[in-house]
Amino acid sequence: MKTRHTPGMLGKTCAGLAALMMLVVAGPGLSQETSAQHQNPATTQTTYAADVAAIINENCVVCHREGGIAPMQLTNYEQVRPWAPLIQDRVVNRKMPPYSYDHGIGIQELQGDWRLSEEEIDTIVAWVGQGAPSGNLNEIPAMPDLPDLAEWNFADQFGQPDIVLASNSIDVPASGNDLWDIHFVESGLTSDRCIKAVQVKPRGDAKSVVHHANTYFAEVDENGNVSRSPLTEYAMGKWGEIIPEGVCRTASADKLVQWDIHLYPGGIGAVAPGTMIEDNVVELGIWLHDEDYQADIKQDLASYQLNQGDLLIPPHGKIMTQGLHTFDHPVRIDSFQPHGHLRMNAASLEIFYPETGRTEVVSSISDWSAVWHHSHLFEPDAAPLLPTGAVLIIKQWYDNTADNPNNPDPRQWVAWGQRTADEMTHAWIAVSHLDEETYQELLAERKANENGALAMTSNN
Image 1 (tube, rainbow, N blue to C red):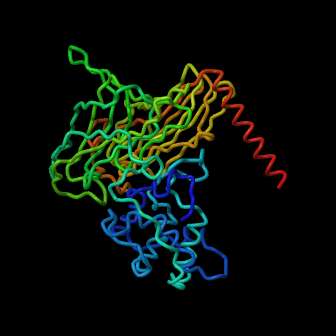
Image 2 (cartoon, rainbow, N blue to C red):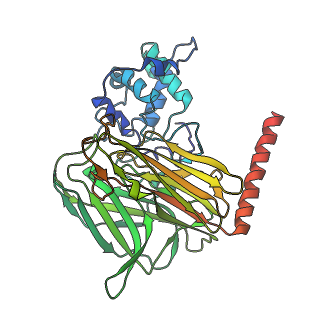
Image 3 (tube, rainbow, N blue to C red):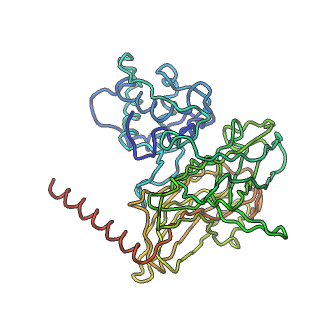
């Protein structure tokens, strides 16, 4: 099993490679022009046993196995061989794994990055181009230990969550209008603690019917008014969040946890059950630092709104929304997660520096899908450091035409709204708030690391 910079192998989880489910509904056509860009000129034979099995085992079987959420098994050569051309198509066009984050644009150092490397893609293309030979099947590497399908995504890395909070059980009908459920539960905390990681997990078959399940630390006054701050956000396909070392996102002992759950009867996407889900429960897992953990840097998660007044998409039309945000102190951007519904198809994050007039592209996502929301977690030593006054520029694009495969009806006007058929335009961003001294220390540390890397390169 190869080692990635993802936190924990198979942190991809069963959600990880369900994009191969798309093979069932996709046509068998292969883009010769695209695949040609990845042809391996090597003359040595590429085989399943020697070259491809490891890639499939490490990236696919987590979903494509008995009991998995994908529609076919890919645990041996006999199962993989009939799908070889379509696997190549999905890999080359980066539809698989389902992690839409553009290569070569902006920051590429991510935690929980599901994307295949260029070398892995070239290997699969070469194998299919040579007729998908088996090779010596006795030499296939051992299958990795696969996590239980119901396991928490961070269990291998952090063990079981310190706190698990379940929502009320909700019956979700097979069809009908969107449903919402908002209620409060006790946190179980006896003292304020710093969060290490957090995951929201719908149980069983509920993944495709839970549009979102957000949690908040909340207080309710004597008049019933609620004041709240986000604990974490969940939308379909989201893997979870890790808070960087030396940073504290506080779990408050003196507050309730508010569930805000949006459900879509019948479900969305290739795994939508189309049947009633009884006693649907969503769980929140929180991993905590030790009580004596100290961190001077405070982090929060917030929804950064774009210009919702511009979010009115005409029939058969396309639009772009944009939002700007600045801070009166230095910050570090720890994660970026754009949010929309069925017509949204792209997003980007940029930084404008007023003192120099320079604009830096941080993230670009040009094939966004509502069934795979990802919180793109920047590696701490690559996460953007913003001086006071720098401006975040968030852009999102919407396609209400028949060319958008997720569009249920291009004839409709679409405006902002809470329903799945409506649209939204915001991004969830985790921000570490810095003072000037800490900002300068992090900046100097990063420059020193860059200079050290350049020195090593020149010596080699």
